Image (cartoon, rainbow, N blue to C red; front, side, top):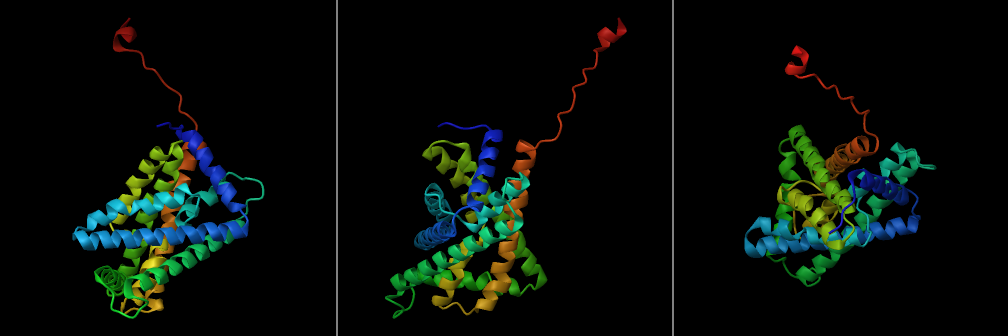
Length: 280
């Protein structure tokens, strides 16, 4: 496996952020749609595996397969562009503007949502004979999860909202590390390993991912979860998006940019004479 230096890969991060910022609207929507759809399929696989085995960590072990597929194919998640696109502004790339950044984030979010919702409907049809039968064990697990991660947080009021926000920060700290970690390697195996580890951590610790939740909660409602769209948005999606933004931008993008591409001045070395020399 071949690797590149940290400084070189952070330069690659900035270049990637710039290319995403100026991508055609059509391409942004298509790539983000596919990213949301593939990630949703991976969630369905992970939940099914956890239900079948009765061991939740099994779901976490296999969930990264979806993230690896979409990343290798060049599709975009909102969590990834939170970390990468702002770097083009920090680096003062020509034409990079704050309005352009907001447009990119908005288009990626829309594409992810449409992809996740489309997959939610398709999975719902597949699991219930076109909504004519009750959901099986996996569908029921999704419904229970959707309820617990909205109404369960709502029971704690502001503390619950803060908890979701922090889980969003922790999630995209790991997810964005997976996105940029893949840039350290020049071959597929190295990229997959670099992505698999942090994605496993986020899923295994049940942190909150905005795009995963764009699929999980709509499907949960289809499967019978007693929640509303307002419950989903207020007690999960909005604080998660804000947390994902902070985690990706501050804990990954800005940290790596500041310390590898724009490091502080090197301190001069002061060599003190040994006691023996000083005595002479």
